[in-house]
Amino acid sequence: MPEIWECVGNTPIVDVDGISFKLEYLNPGGSHKDRMAVSMLLDLIDRKGRGGAIVEATSGCTGVSLSLHGRAMGFDVYITVKEESSPVKVALMRSLGAKVYTCPNVPPEDPRSIKSVAERIAEEKGATFLMQDSNPANPRGQERMGEEILESLRRVDVFVMGVGTGGTITGVGKLLKKEFGTKIIAVTSKGSELARKFGLSSKFEGEVEGYDSYHIPDNLDLSLVDEVYEVSRAEAIEWASELLKKGIMGGMSTGAHYLASLYAKKKYGGTVVTVAADSVLFHPPILNASSGVAAYKLPF
Image (cartoon, rainbow, N blue to C red; front, side, top):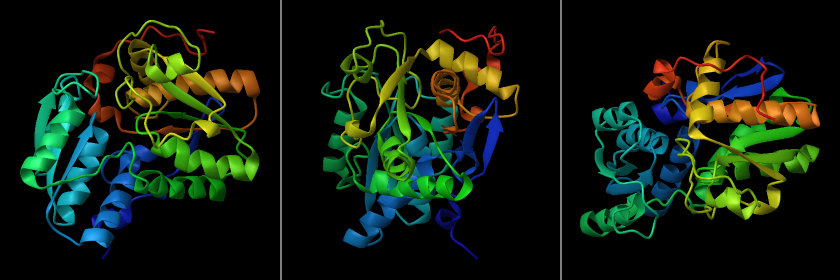
């Protein structure tokens, strides 16, 4: 009988509107973050052995994955989350046995930020701060997703992925670009630090949950990125709601990926692959939305 963390991966790929969606919300913890969480935890066990405590700063999905797999592996789990994080995710982390601390959505250097609070918890509790944004086990854990895509599809012309920690777009993108010369499109919140770096000047309109708006993570290999597309929080909710009508039960970032993928399909054609990163069940705003988006009416 396998352990719960051994059941991560091998998620299906389905076609919607000519876009290939990797259904990562079918992982045990409900998101693609299961892959990196298990990778970071096994790496920690290799270096320090089982037991002890871990802490991580996260907008939500990583916290759920670490709560599930970390507790199963025998760790005490401490999580810091932004105050607007999904209440469903926060409740789930606590139900899984993690201790969760809610923090305001402020830049990382602010002493009230999820990063600053996680650093204090690490010092006070003697916990290992996994630091998903810079932990090399993060993109290593996502490489298997890339291998699964290679096993399923003859060719990938464009890969579309949002940037939170940078682990997925780097781990998957590196394999696809090497194999096919795939164009890598990064998706980010409108007005984010990444958007500004690529010359986009939109006003910040709220963070797409799961993305990082305030800094560019160390795990993001910018040399892989061919283009950046920015999506507002409202657009992400609307397009996730539209996608739900088509049978894809993805969350907020999945809506952003859908919109960006339709853009990529129109611009580049070919096989466009993206990720249904987490479950709509984590996102009450999508379930409560009455979408006014007309199918195929694109804002470009």
